Image 1 (spheres, rainbow, N blue to C red):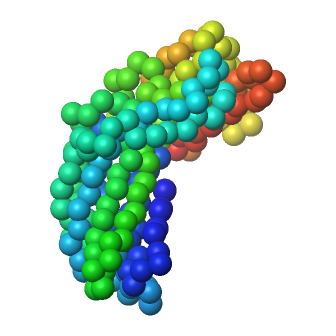
Image 2 (cartoon, helix red, strand yellow; image 1 turned 30 degrees about the vertical axis):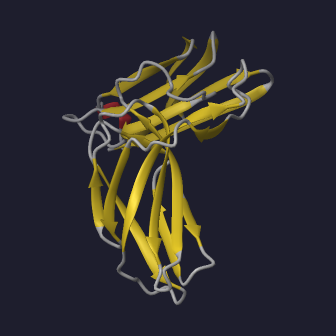
Length: 219
């Protein structure tokens, strides 16, 4: 997500994926530009706050919101704008967070930006937030030495999910998964019969709604 805050002589932006895998370090750039969209070098502070889900219903099909779980950040630090910074959030619990960044423009006015993300680990056994469908593709390019790896899950109880695997228009595999508030890891080693790749489709019907997730695995 890209969130920007204006009404100042400076625009501050940062890009943070909606889901962030905490198993490995990752990079963030805090972008600062003037109103002519020219980069500006400024120093600022960042704060990472845990969030908690609000209006959680019995069914995860209802949209949940988030609010700050605490005014105490679990991580703080300084940054220089427009330079790549490496973060390692592996020690934090899986779940929703908001990253807030603040700088001062040349008039001394504070400019802020914030973005939400869901921290998770590939070792998580259930979705870290209520999710009708939880999906994460770790590796979608495969060959004989490196299998494709992806994760599919749901917060729903006692669901039936159809999983179909296609190569071109040929159906290679079809099976029903019975999942209940869990995440399943899938690993597909490359086979010659896959040609340039395969297409995996998940479909779940719940309370009259259809949920689909699909991933293309390529050689």
